[in-house]
Length: 172
Image 1 (cartoon, rainbow, N blue to C red):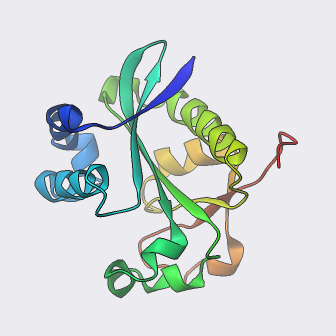
Image 2 (image 1 turned 90 degrees about the vertical axis):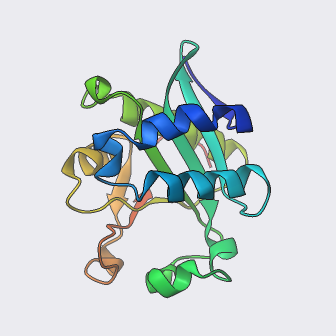
């Protein structure tokens, strides 16, 4: 059973350890910088909502949801001008599995499907994810979870492959 618990200050040491792992360092930024972003989220300086995802009660990774409209008024637009090309009502999702031995086992797809159901139940209809196109393991997992490339943005988003969830479960 997949569950999501909001990240709390007490979780920062756990996240610092995860962020320092090589399979995280490959796709995330500097661990201290990333931890600072998460601290900003917890303390309300960023509207992004961070969660620890659990399966059967065990902490197995990190997932966050960010709001396109909120990012349009931030410095992120300077580094990622393609944000202006996205629908303002959309939300973005980022995910990482804690343990490298748990990669390529279907966990990411399972967690994403559960998170999408959660977001849809909260009224979000446009759910995006933006992996680095070189991260083929992630791209494959996201496709398996129901995300498809946004063809109108291919080649326009630098080192991000914009993908949108296609609702196949009949949930609006």
